[in-house]
Length: 111
Image: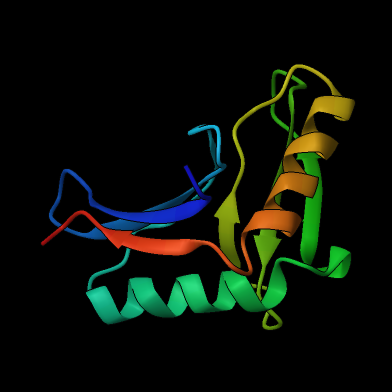
């Protein structure tokens, strides 16, 4: 399988996307969008900003589990990772987003 964005429905009939690595693991997910065009714009922004480290924020949850988020140039969060057990695992996930996000296919599962 090739890396891909999957557009899906939320429970309140909005759309979101997640980015899957070639092994099928979800490596980042987005906020929800009211329209398909908004979701597609989010994917475009992800493709544009993902290769550059300066657009990533690294943090830890209240339980101290590390995660990252990807921001656009306007500082708005485009996507967020899962919670990782270690900082090293977070960095591996972040590197995967950098590698796969720019060229990943888009699969719209809302049609």
